[in-house]
Amino acid sequence: MSEVNNEQVQAGIPTKPAPVQPGQCPINPRTGRPECPPPDRIECIVVDKVYDSCFQVDNRSREIFTDELEFGTGLEAGDTVSCNLTEGAEITCTEISRTPVGDGFFTITLLVSVPVTVTNPEAAKGECNQLTRIFTFTKTVTLCAPEGVDLDCTESVLLSCHCVVTNANEFEEEGEAEYAITCEIQVCLVIKSILRVQLLVPSYGFCVPAPCVTLPGVCPPLPPEQCF
Image (cartoon, rainbow, N blue to C red; front, top):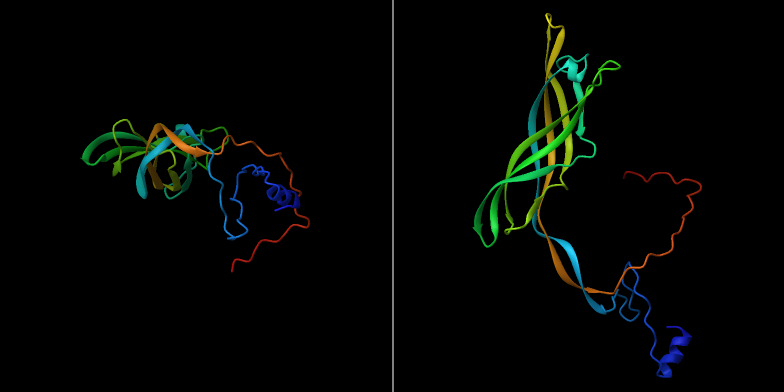
């Protein structure tokens, strides 16, 4: 405590508490532990409440059938083609059915949709070398999901996608090749039951932004840390 604050306390003048800032709570000098000041109000805020959630890693295999007009030339059986989640797209799920199991819990069957883009690395210049497909599969989970709650899978992640040309047939009469491509995907499926609600929460008021700062670069650059 500063000399000014000591004089104020001795004179019986109340001291103004320091403004609350984001970050770690101030350390109490007597206990050495962080202590947050008590909230001074209760706010009503609108938030997405997560009633329940679960995750699981799912491995699936899917086949793609295409031809050189759609996917370009140059592929043979055994060739690999790249596969990624379609840019700007998300993994989504749609509820198909639900069965109540008691206490607000339901066994829910979902249709999971994974949009992927497959690229032909051997396609000649000017040929179409990408195609987009939506891989779908069903998933059954048990969650707390009362009536009105939405099911959300947008936090799911495509962990891996590996595609191999399993068949490449060229038809002499038409002069075109048809491809059969097998893709193995691994999805980290995150399922949440969410509802927009109003909640009462303790508060310190609005959060005021701090002034922007610019940190200088490290000179000289530091080497990376050892791996062991």
